[in-house]
Picture 1 (cartoon, rainbow, N blue to C red):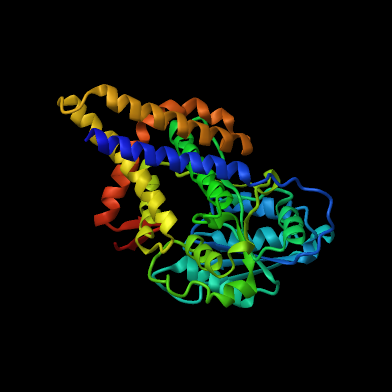
Picture 2 (cartoon, rainbow, N blue to C red):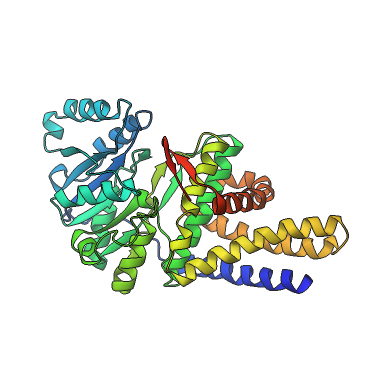
Length: 380
């Protein structure tokens, strides 16, 4: 057992250490004063988001980018609240002289499927007028210079696909801080993967690609039986086809903020939805990363039980926990520094103690159970 603990701990140390090195290899992009030229189609699928849409719409109206260079396509995925009315009323009332060139469309999802979000995005892309697609979510807030950041990066680096940063808006509750620590760890690993040229993760709340590239890789074909993964599976396909033109926009002005889940039940359902797509990964590095992280957290719990009953001594478990504690903290520290969210690190100790129980629980139940998301049942 001691040798197993040693091997897994060493593997985890190398993995997270690699992400730290990769994170620092991705240069921070500083926004300059480059003229706006790139044309974007912003795709926003939504289902029952009446609570969050006003904030999103206000951030859309506040975008600094010239209005005639972008369009917004909202895709209603069978909402039964007043989301549609909110969008129509807000954007119609915004058609003042200063905003007269805002172009938006509101369409319904083309058909029902096992993967409604992928279907919604595909429906929007079919009618998109512009060469660049950017996806975000209806519960997000967009930064003022969001499109300016993408425009300048595209003009300087000529990518075909760009992943970009996402975090949560923070409150003082432990649940919120726990989720923010979690998403920052995922973002740190994502950026680190790009720095290591192992592009295995991104977030569809801030993801851009050329429409021609989407069509060239046949969009989401091959992944439509899985409810989630509109971001990761597409990233995999594009990275395989054009690896040198898939980039990460590590820019403070491009950070999109979204909302953490309001309770533990919804958080677990969300994580089960994320976990449901792991069996379909074709990215070996992504699978290995997930395995090492899960084994490390599981062994901490197993080691705790074995130490309590006297099979191993607590000193071995302490060394494993000490190594994990410090390497995790360093990755979180550099990530939180970039996101200007270092204040959340005050919750790191408690979050570190809770996380192994949370992650192993989600992994176990996701193997045997479906989940409910936005009023829909999804089977395993």
